[in-house]
Length: 153
Image (cartoon, rainbow, N blue to C red; front, side):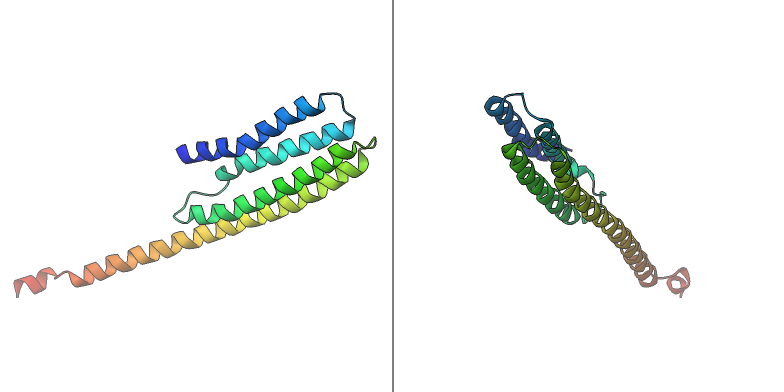
């Protein structure tokens, strides 16, 4: 739990920095397109912060979490770049900023959910393999132990 909290704090630092800089430098009077981009950037950071809680706890959990972190980190970076372009351009219409941000979000969800499915299948396979190994070791130990008939002879 401590590692997750530290990771959460680590990923929250850029979010805090972005919010402070946004309001100090740009103020609070903006067109709708800027606020929409601001919200999408916030969502991307929150999803990045939530990533450590997505993977199932298994023996290979840290390995599985690497791909989740890469997917979420890439999405956060892409969303940040798109959002900053929209914020810099300050368009009056919200159509193209919304479309430009929904497309990467859908790609992100597809990649994330696909990876979570893979993790579930791999974790189930790891558990079955570990159970077979344990059963095999127990059988070997049982065969190696002398039986009561052998002891009497």
